[in-house]
Image (cartoon, rainbow, N blue to C red; front, top):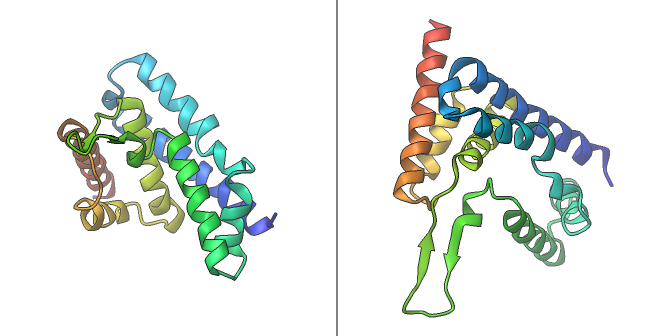
Amino acid sequence: MSRAYDTYLEEHRSNVHKAFEWMCEHIPDIFKDEETRQACEHQCTYSHDQSKYDAEEYAAYDAYFYGGNKSYAVTQEFNRAWLHHIHCNPHHWQYWILTNDDPNLGEFVLDIPLNYIIEMVCDWWSFSWASGHLDEIFDWYEEHSGYIKLSDDTKETVEHILDLIKQNLEKHSG
């Protein structure tokens, strides 16, 4: 266990919460209803990335990012931890990819429920909060959007939320 990784986790979860609080204040209509807002609040305040404290993830993440050694064994353990993480956390787009056993059926990209879309955007945006440059998320998304697999409806919702964030940041900075 490293203090550096514990500090990172605490700061990351705090920044996810800050992103959520900003959305509540500046774009409250994205939540559609009180039930969605409450679900997002719980996810972004209490349960976000809790699995990173689990035995299946903690040591592998700590060793990979803070151990100073990215050997084959450390990388393999991290890859297993990452797979565990995305399978346990529906705020990751990878969680919503269904790869069928039947090759004729292929792969399906499922719609992500709104509460997880909002948590996903807060998760992405948390890194902008960490750097103090809240507009970094837009370049990040542009660089990654061709790779990220989202259903058409989910992509439309994500981009709508990002547009609302951008509009409000511009409105409040100018």
